[in-house]
Length: 261
Image 1 (cartoon, one colour):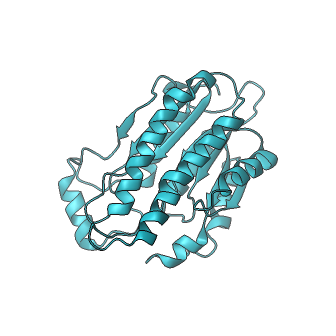
Image 2 (tube, rainbow, N blue to C red):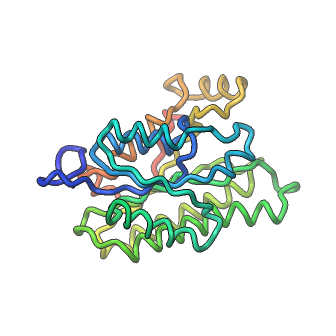
Image 3 (cartoon, helix red, strand yellow):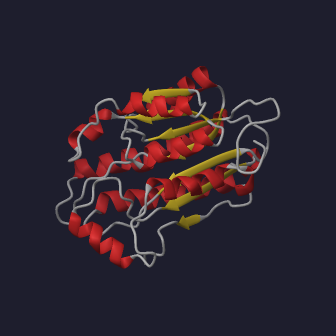
């Protein structure tokens, strides 16, 4: 990767970013792939329609094709891979398919999640296990498979994961995200010999269409900058971390929330 914040090399070859959890056009994952596509990356991304279908927002028909078309407009080759990351065999399959379709993966960005609200007293064992299978184990296995396969130039590799401090009232989500933090930060040291950096981003509440009106107003008022965060806000930080300019940022949990306490 060369240039000022842009991917590619002197020959014009675009590096490959693998982004998980890109199922809706309004989501953070979609914002990330748009930004990286504009910055010179080819993009492999995962989606799991069955998750969106059981959530209140529902499956977005045609979203995967639309995101692929947007990437093509940015000059990016694209590989969309359907995968349930609760399946322990999915990460190896995803990395193998991304490599076979686009080439070796340089950057891994983990945007996927299981997120169903429940508290200490009403969380079921099934829900708890599902959250940890997707958010913690699935992320670990994605990072592990990436580390096993990475063969890029020393200093070019990137891992970025998304976390949250939303725990009260969302116990399995918050607890599993806490585990994800530690897994990713461990990678900053354990994969250092490969020249791979690993960082975690906490984007705070991002307006992706899930917020009730009352929540939107509360978050806006509580944020010093006086507005809601957007996927584009978060995507710009991912773009920086994945660029050569971000190579000295490693092993960090970064708050990117407009100053929301």
